[in-house]
Amino acid sequence: GFERIDSSKKGVYIDGHERADVVQEREKYLDSLHAIEFVHSPPPNPSDVCPGDQQPVQTGNSSASKHLVTIFHDESSFQSNDDQRFVWSQPDQTAIKPKSRGSGRMVSDFIEEHAGYLRLTTDDFERAKVDFPDIACEARQIIEYGENRDGYWTCDKFVSKVKPAVAIAEIKYPKDRYS
Image (cartoon, rainbow, N blue to C red; front, side, top):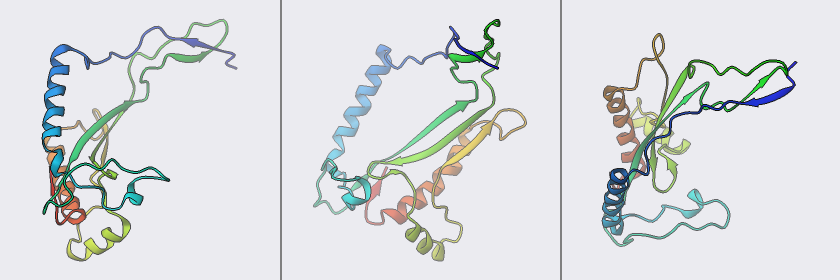
């Protein structure tokens, strides 16, 4: 059996999140978010989004006729051999790291500022199906990417998920604006 754990010296390439140009663009983006913060809505019901005794940070103008609900898109990729630093090996053998990063999955989803992932509650979903029989309860998509699988993430696949996300937002926030 395997009796020892060994470390691999090679790792996954890390992106340049702290490069000067990236930091500058991030600061501009955060400034634009702060500029629209006054129209953000408070959470619809704090107990729905904050567990226990936690309270949400109240931002925005609660007397505005329409509030802004910010919805972000995020995607993450995972591979079966991502950054394996430790591997089990025999005492008399050297650990060999796989040549490829292995099969991969990509998760694409929309995130709203108050409740996390953009999705309808079970009750909202059941009510929405009456008028919109093709409605989905969430806009998440998971693909197994690569050849002979689901292909690769493309602009067309992204656009196909924006439409359900907009429909969910219109049902969930009928009196608000979303961006």
